[in-house]
Length: 175
Image 1 (cartoon, one colour):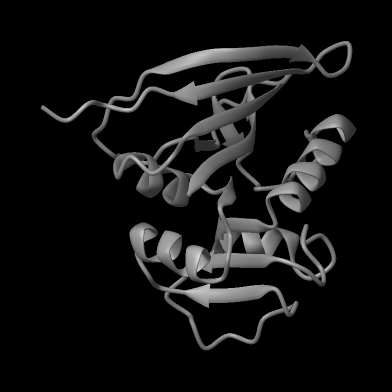
Image 2 (cartoon, one colour):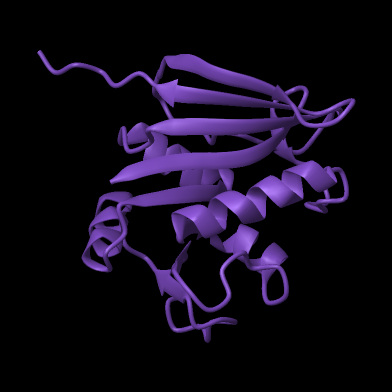
């Protein structure tokens, strides 16, 4: 399965401001977010991201699978595509493959992104860099010890201030 990350970042690498309010995101980011989620039809996110989006702004409404990583697996989902799970990233990939998915996109947050990166389960990263700095906020990665090299595939100017960076992840060869 091919797994991508699509995430907005501040110019200093934060994925959220201190209040966790997405008022700093451009319209272009929002359009790209919906587009990639609907193209992939399998979306992975953490509980905080879900709480920000649900119920009205979930990207999949009637088709596909929305995986929410949480310890609260008994919660009632806001949409029929939503699956709450406490499974590991490897188990989530297997679950999505069993449902017929060949690709998925991770849309947040930092713990979810970090877990998938640490296990080498990410194939590409799309960063939408918004023109803002946060002195405090949520970093792209949690305290996870890994190093991953990237290859730049594309740079696209989305508007007069926002750029999109598209990378492939260099997979480590096993020796």
